[in-house]
Image (cartoon, rainbow, N blue to C red; front, side, top):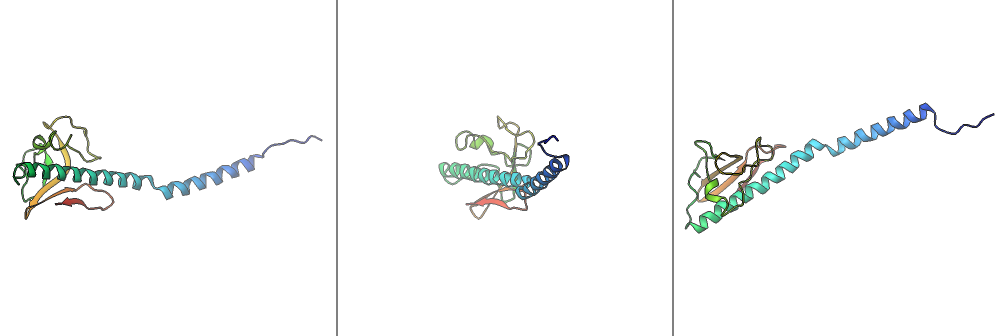
Amino acid sequence: MRNKKGFTLIEVLLVIVIIAILAGIVIIAINPGRQIASANNAQRSSDVSAVLSAVLQYSIENRGALPAGITAAALPISSAAGAADICALLVPTYISAMPFDPTAVGAHYTTCADYDTGYTVLTADTRVTVAAPGAELAATISVTK
């Protein structure tokens, strides 16, 4: 009589099934898609605050005048026609580089010649608002000062 030590095929398969079920539960609990969307929203919030701070610093140094292109209508911050093209007025004096939406295609603009941040800016009643209309998870991201 030989005494063999080891696991049977059934025992190994049972352990694999249990590990797969636990891994599935963990992945559902972590929800990586939601985590990425939340991280993108945090970046958007930081970006709109940075742009608003740069606009306000420009205004302070120019006796209350806002950068040309900021109107009462919410315009995209972009070099496109009809947009609020404020990059050349703010970069690099008031902000090191113009921030962009984290999901923007062709991001990491190196000049103000051709860019689209994915953010909007407007002024109303001497207050400036910068917003991120592409926010995920049904979030509203805007800063007004």
